[in-house]
Image 1 (tube, rainbow, N blue to C red):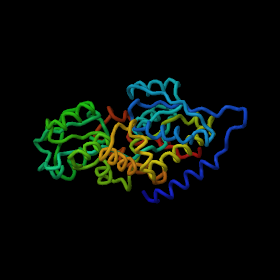
Image 2: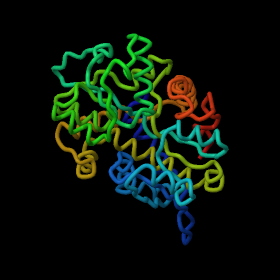
Image 3: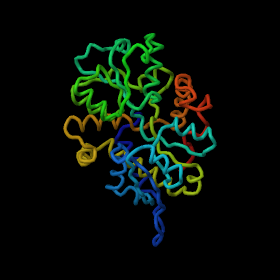
Length: 327
């Protein structure tokens, strides 16, 4: 991670203690944040709530659950939410169209192609002629990055030389476990559950990103908000950033915290431990500017594959996609 988890914990908790609390008698500034009901972001927000990191940092969280990503995106764009979690491709496309949305890194955890432990598939080239299922659709950035690497390094066009099917992550997870597929590209938390149950990673989207020019782990998702809101609500944004850092620090350091979260994570034993470990690996540890530089490099690769359907008319990632202001 670049710094020890214990150091991260100490710094985050020190920041929480130094936060400016709201004036007595005055309500703390509120942050309305939309999340998916069963998404991984709820783990961090529950940790904030349990430890009172929001209150300690002078902010009040109003957490609004949604059944699907489209619904939360619509609510955010309509102004009914201050913040959601989404990816930098979506943010860049909105900025290219004139919106002032921006993103603060949340996690570098990404999906991977998974196969059974005893599978003869050992490299990307071995996927030729195999049944490969992909979560997230044909424009999912994990899929596009792995496609680009397969073609460059193995001369393999996965869209033509493998039997590719797209589907919802839970459905593909079940079909994978039942043995109907040779390999599956799923989101990181589904992959972690498979790892704990007799499967191995063939290649991760993070491996593909590094092979295609990224210098380090690139945040796949971030907290998305508008620059105008950030300017008008600096104490709320600053408080939220400190609360988020404090929660991540606890999750990075405390195994007991994960056992407490087990009912929300809906895992136990080896599965919970694998989810914990993969989550920890995904905690951003680089300066935002480095994240943004690597994302811009990958954007050009993705734009070349996904074309206008993915990025619209913008050949490069829009400036300001990653928030680098002060909270």
